[in-house]
Every structure is written in structure tokens, then in C-alpha cells.
Amino acid sequence: MAMAPATRRWTVEQVHQLPDDGNRYEVIDGRLLVSPSPSYRHQGLARELTVMLGQYLRANPIATFFPAPAGVDVSADTEVEPDLFVVPLVNGRDPKSFAEAERLLLVIEILSPSSRVIDRTIKREFYQRLGVPEYWIVDPDAKAVERWRPGTTAPEIVSEGIEWRPDPHRPAWTLDLADLFARVE
Image (tube, rainbow, N blue to C red; front, top):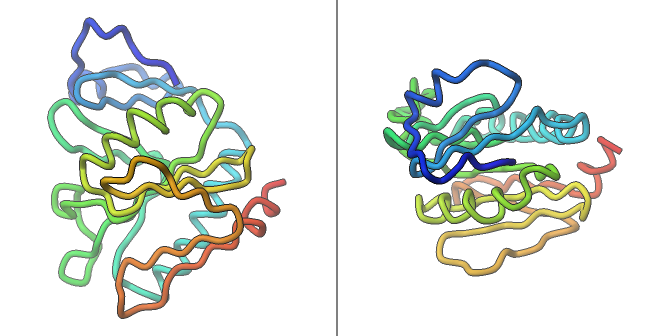
């Protein structure tokens, strides 16, 4: 993932005017982030996570999720497009916009060679500052997930299984990482 020169401050509106050239454009605090189209392996992981998370949320209707491309507009100079993100339901239904959802419950990014530094620094710091309860960085090479929470200074590295419990009165979403990575190998 590349960053545009730091001399220009970008707005979400300006980013929306960029050409549809196959790149993913995001802006955090006016800083433009550009990443190329994801790899086949990346998309395989995104597909499997989408299916598994969808099954969990259908059985436990407490939130809804969106896979990329779906933008999260935070302010006039910040819009991110995570690989997957979860927002709470609003009065028992899917929110009509991120503004209505108001918050992120879980954000998942899948590392690519071009996104490693940005996902682990700029995006992580942003999601922690935003107060996202869980930010997962899926590392296909290490076959592990880095779990970040607000206020932590180091990730929890998980290589066997990971649980996400957005509601203490519902069962957790349990993800077998060996199974996940085997599905795309």
C-alpha cells in the first residue's frame, strides 16, 4: 500500500472523484492510502471469513457485516475500506448508513505485501483511536491473526483459534485458524 505525498491533505470528496482504476483508495486524517487489487489468496481468505461470519451473525442477529468494497465514512477527511467490518443493528435492523450505525464492533484486515506497514501502523492506530473493540490483522504467511484492542501496545498473536464475543449473552464466534487457512491453500 502506498501513501500519497504528505504535502497534500485529501478529503473524502476528493477521493471519491479519483478514477476507478482497480486500486483501493482510503483516506485517514487527510492522508491518502492507495493499495492495488488484492491477490487471489487474499480474496480466498475474505470469501471464507465472509461465509463464516455470515453464518454466525445469521444465528446470532445482533449485528451486520460488510465486506470490501464498503466504505466507512468517519469525517470529511477520513474514510476507510476494511476487508470486513461489523456494525451493530439499529432497532433490530441493518443500519442504512455508517452514520446510523455509529460504531464499529470488529474490523478485519487481511495482509498483503503492499498493505503490511499501513495495516499494522496507520490503520491500527486509527482503529484504536476510534475505540474499535477488536481489530484483527489476518496474516496469511504466518497463518495467524494479530488481535488489537483499544489501549494495547502489542497485539495478541493467535495461531490456533480465535473467539469474538460481541454480546455476553450469546455464544462466541469461534474461528479455527488451521481450518480457515487450509480452505485457501
